[in-house]
Amino acid sequence: MLNNVDNGPVMIDWLSPRDYKTSLVFIHDIAEKCRHLGGIHSAHLYDLVQNGKYREVVDYRVPFGADLEDYRYAVQIQGLLKKNPWVDLGFNPLREGVLAFIKGEKKCALTNLILEDFRPNGRVAQVFHLARCKIKELLGQVPPLEALQLRYGPGANTSVKSAAASLSAKLGATLACSEDMLPTLGELLTELPMIVEHYCEKSPHLLPFHEPDPDGVSYRVNNKVQVRIDDGKLVFVPKDAKTHRPILVEPVLNGMFQLGIGSYLKDRLASSGIDLRDQSRNRSLACEASIHGRLATVDLSSASDTISWGLVADLLPPEWLDFLAQFRTGTANYQGNIIRLEKFSSMGNGYTFELESCIFYSLVFGCVSLLGGEISNIGIFGDDIILPVEAMGLLFEVFDYAGFWVNPQKSFWHGPFRESCGSDWLNGNDVRPFFVRDCINDKTLYNFHNWLIRHGERELAKICEAYTWAPIRIYGPDGYGDGHLIGSHDLYRKRKDIRSGFEGGYFDTYSLRSKRKHIRRPSDWLVPAYSVYTRSGAETDTDPYSVRGSVGYVRTSIYTLNEGIFLR
Image (cartoon, rainbow, N blue to C red; front, side, top):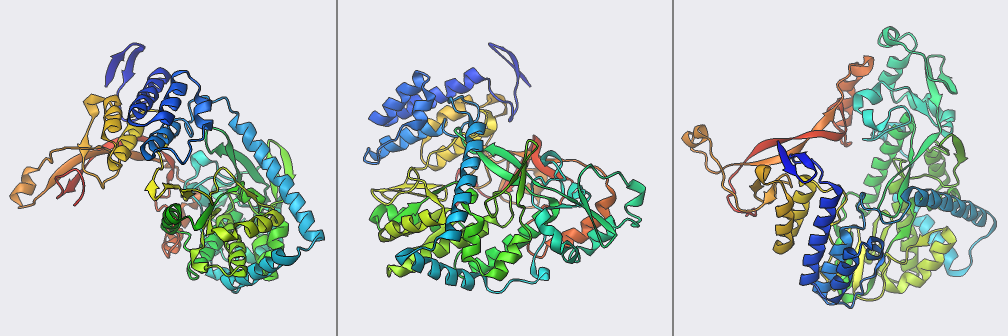
């Protein structure tokens, strides 16, 4: 469907982006309404938006002592720009990401030297002792290989690019591992007998489709299977408007075992009350802390990039250090330059999140225990940390020795504000804004509109609604996603359902169509066995040809008994 606008005909559909000028007008309209609904700080930010000073909008610190409504609308104006990928704020995100990576590596190198040559004294030494004991308790015995639920992750590896990263492609990809994995590779491959059979040089599944291996160093296992030795591939992905996040793309075999270890560690930590599958506890603690002020919320800068080898060696039992080390990737390739990493593991490693959570929890546990605080007040989810305020001084000492940077802009232990796990609280009130992270199209507008409706912001929601394409605008109830606008709607009924005595009816909604690359590969005979194996608990996509992303959208009908806007 085409619509004529000033710049010519535009395709009307749910995903068609608005032009840059229209998108800026939308931001200005939302900011103007926030100015009228807010106070002096909202008005100040609106003036900056009007003058095109978008970077000043993002950098402005709204005081926590502001009127509650003024604060909410002021940070919502910032939310329009802070993580917006298409508004130029004058930053160089890639450069900032590279500099942050280099800074993290230098910090890890320094920490490795300090931990090797200097022993802490006094309270810091006691905290480290308590942390080692706690880690040993949390981890238990090193698991046998058969206890790991090995699986592929959803993204790329060094053998398969992200755009083609389906299960089928990964099962058929060139086998590769890091140099760290070589000493135990033969033993590890015994856990993958069908993959070994497929890649065996005499395999009937391989010979008809045999292609030359890419150039590079390779290692032959038991004179049967050839495995390429890969460095990790260092890439940078958008984090926000200011910087990119460094990610290390792992070799395929490393990734499988890392994810298996990550799932095992999640289960171990959950048995001790540290649930890394649920953020609600941290959010609840942060809400309470914003009221009574007895708990601090702490965020770290470049947390994953400052987990140094020396720290892991100092805190973990030797058998666990050896076990985890054999699956890490210790070298990174960035634009042809090989970097030997000072960190133990990076973002991209399948067990980094669980390992850092375990380390942070144990160090915080040591601080709180030493001071006689309440252990139940500790909250850990990755580098989102919550602990009693009285332990903050000791935590600074411990984290400084351990090589961590506390982020002062996102850590709070005074005043009425707390932030943790994507939730912002001011005196017990939810003040988290909606962040515009995509180009302005109907999909983004539907998400924003529905978020505003759920938060009681009907005037702002009307602006979002007005910018959606009227010819394809659809409404429905809450509770069924954001493929439709939450609003008054009439259910339609099918004659056969009425005759059968069914109550309720149907409404329409949009949904993204999964992207699939259906390419037959000689490794497809492995798919059924892999699917049965991973169904034992590991999360995985069951469609072997599904890849990340989407291609277009569909309009579908949903049956419901609910005739109101919100579910009863």
